[in-house]
Length: 211
Image (cartoon, rainbow, N blue to C red):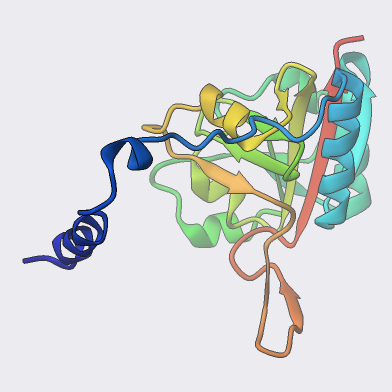
């Protein structure tokens, strides 16, 4: 008998004398906390991203190339990893060396690259979380875990949802999902924070509107 079977057996025995109508119920979870407008939801996303120590930028479609170029320049980046399906126009205003992720490339190769630019699948306002699903504009998971600087572009409001349940509805669980809430960080038992342990030390998020 497995541990799972033992636990379920104990639950069944504990409920043996409880009338069925008292055990057959479904908990009614909230799909989101409070009623917010689209603008308020986007503002909440920006606030929670910043609370997690991500750097947030806002711009329009036409401004995006110059914003990305400015971010790369400010970080001192000489090279950037580019997912295979990234819109080439996003990097039109920068002349940094572009590195394409290749299956035969090594982790050491990626570690020598300064930055990575990706899109995202969905952004969750209530938790300040970005979710990547390996789509062509996001690339393989490793390109967002090895370079020390990640620039993630979020289309507003199309890719922004209020809550985790709403985000899950948009995601395919069979895809390689990466959930990002701020730069990579951990703390020891004395709560000393260390950043960049298992992912980028710096996360910059660009919220792009179509206006």
